[in-house]
Length: 136
Image (cartoon, rainbow, N blue to C red; front, side, top):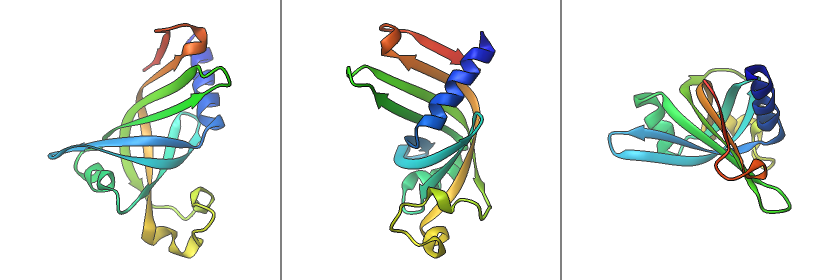
Protein backbone atom coordinates (compact mmCIF):
# COMPACT_ATOMS: atom_id res chain seq x y z
CA UNK A 1 0.00 0.00 0.00
CA UNK A 2 2.76 2.48 0.94
CA UNK A 3 4.68 1.71 -2.25
CA UNK A 4 1.56 2.41 -4.36
CA UNK A 5 0.97 5.68 -2.52
CA UNK A 6 4.61 6.64 -2.95
CA UNK A 7 4.33 6.05 -6.71
CA UNK A 8 1.06 8.08 -6.91
CA UNK A 9 2.69 11.00 -5.10
CA UNK A 10 5.78 10.87 -7.32
CA UNK A 11 3.53 10.84 -10.41
CA UNK A 12 1.55 13.82 -9.04
CA UNK A 13 4.76 15.77 -8.39
CA UNK A 14 6.08 14.91 -11.86
CA UNK A 15 2.91 16.04 -13.64
CA UNK A 16 2.95 19.52 -12.08
CA UNK A 17 5.56 22.25 -11.87
CA UNK A 18 4.19 25.09 -9.70
CA UNK A 19 3.25 25.29 -6.04
CA UNK A 20 2.95 27.65 -3.08
CA UNK A 21 5.83 27.47 -0.60
CA UNK A 22 5.26 28.59 3.00
CA UNK A 23 7.91 29.33 5.60
CA UNK A 24 7.56 30.65 9.13
CA UNK A 25 9.55 33.24 10.96
CA UNK A 26 9.29 35.42 14.03
CA UNK A 27 6.87 37.69 12.14
CA UNK A 28 4.51 34.89 11.10
CA UNK A 29 3.91 32.84 7.96
CA UNK A 30 5.32 33.84 4.58
CA UNK A 31 4.29 32.33 1.25
CA UNK A 32 5.45 32.62 -2.32
CA UNK A 33 4.65 30.84 -5.59
CA UNK A 34 7.54 28.67 -6.78
CA UNK A 35 8.52 26.62 -9.79
CA UNK A 36 9.77 23.18 -8.83
CA UNK A 37 11.08 19.87 -10.09
CA UNK A 38 11.06 16.59 -8.28
CA UNK A 39 13.63 13.87 -7.94
CA UNK A 40 11.45 11.10 -6.55
CA UNK A 41 9.91 12.52 -3.40
CA UNK A 42 12.61 15.16 -3.00
CA UNK A 43 11.67 18.55 -4.46
CA UNK A 44 13.82 21.44 -5.63
CA UNK A 45 12.12 24.86 -5.69
CA UNK A 46 13.19 28.03 -7.43
CA UNK A 47 12.55 30.69 -4.77
CA UNK A 48 12.65 34.39 -5.70
CA UNK A 49 15.28 36.22 -3.66
CA UNK A 50 12.87 39.13 -3.11
CA UNK A 51 10.37 36.87 -1.33
CA UNK A 52 10.20 37.13 2.47
CA UNK A 53 9.88 33.34 2.53
CA UNK A 54 13.41 33.17 1.16
CA UNK A 55 14.77 35.02 4.19
CA UNK A 56 12.74 32.99 6.69
CA UNK A 57 13.98 29.67 5.27
CA UNK A 58 17.33 30.51 6.78
CA UNK A 59 15.73 31.06 10.21
CA UNK A 60 13.52 27.96 10.24
CA UNK A 61 13.93 25.08 7.76
CA UNK A 62 10.39 23.72 8.35
CA UNK A 63 8.30 24.42 5.21
CA UNK A 64 5.06 23.49 3.55
CA UNK A 65 4.58 23.22 -0.21
CA UNK A 66 1.02 23.03 -1.54
CA UNK A 67 0.37 21.96 -5.13
CA UNK A 68 -3.23 22.22 -6.35
CA UNK A 69 -4.78 21.04 -9.63
CA UNK A 70 -8.36 20.83 -10.84
CA UNK A 71 -9.72 18.43 -13.44
CA UNK A 72 -12.33 19.23 -16.09
CA UNK A 73 -15.13 18.47 -13.58
CA UNK A 74 -13.62 21.05 -11.19
CA UNK A 75 -12.71 18.37 -8.66
CA UNK A 76 -9.63 19.47 -6.75
CA UNK A 77 -6.61 17.35 -6.09
CA UNK A 78 -3.78 18.67 -4.00
CA UNK A 79 -0.60 17.64 -2.28
CA UNK A 80 0.31 19.07 1.12
CA UNK A 81 4.07 18.53 1.39
CA UNK A 82 5.71 19.18 4.77
CA UNK A 83 9.45 19.00 4.95
CA UNK A 84 12.82 20.51 5.68
CA UNK A 85 14.39 23.07 3.37
CA UNK A 86 18.00 23.85 2.64
CA UNK A 87 19.53 26.18 0.09
CA UNK A 88 21.25 24.18 -2.62
CA UNK A 89 24.35 25.29 -4.46
CA UNK A 90 24.27 23.82 -7.95
CA UNK A 91 24.49 25.06 -11.52
CA UNK A 92 21.92 22.60 -12.87
CA UNK A 93 18.70 24.58 -12.48
CA UNK A 94 18.38 26.75 -15.58
CA UNK A 95 15.41 24.60 -16.73
CA UNK A 96 13.35 26.02 -13.84
CA UNK A 97 13.85 29.66 -14.84
CA UNK A 98 10.96 31.53 -16.47
CA UNK A 99 11.40 31.71 -20.25
CA UNK A 100 12.24 35.43 -20.31
CA UNK A 101 14.98 35.25 -17.67
CA UNK A 102 18.50 34.68 -19.06
CA UNK A 103 20.32 31.94 -17.15
CA UNK A 104 23.16 34.40 -16.46
CA UNK A 105 20.75 36.40 -14.23
CA UNK A 106 19.18 33.37 -12.57
CA UNK A 107 21.47 33.29 -9.54
CA UNK A 108 20.92 37.00 -8.90
CA UNK A 109 17.13 36.65 -8.96
CA UNK A 110 16.50 33.20 -7.45
CA UNK A 111 17.90 30.61 -5.10
CA UNK A 112 17.40 26.88 -5.38
CA UNK A 113 15.94 25.28 -2.27
CA UNK A 114 15.89 21.51 -1.78
CA UNK A 115 13.02 20.02 0.24
CA UNK A 116 13.28 16.72 2.10
CA UNK A 117 9.81 15.31 2.87
CA UNK A 118 8.59 14.58 6.38
CA UNK A 119 4.86 14.15 5.76
CA UNK A 120 2.93 14.10 2.49
CA UNK A 121 -0.88 14.29 2.32
CA UNK A 122 -2.53 13.65 -1.03
CA UNK A 123 -6.17 14.78 -1.13
CA UNK A 124 -8.26 13.90 -4.21
CA UNK A 125 -11.92 14.98 -4.44
CA UNK A 126 -12.43 12.61 -7.39
CA UNK A 127 -12.21 9.77 -4.87
CA UNK A 128 -14.73 11.42 -2.52
CA UNK A 129 -14.90 14.24 -0.02
CA UNK A 130 -12.46 13.96 2.86
CA UNK A 131 -10.34 11.20 1.28
CA UNK A 132 -6.74 11.75 2.32
CA UNK A 133 -3.74 9.47 1.88
CA UNK A 134 -0.71 10.15 4.09
CA UNK A 135 2.91 9.13 3.62
CA UNK A 136 5.34 9.81 6.46
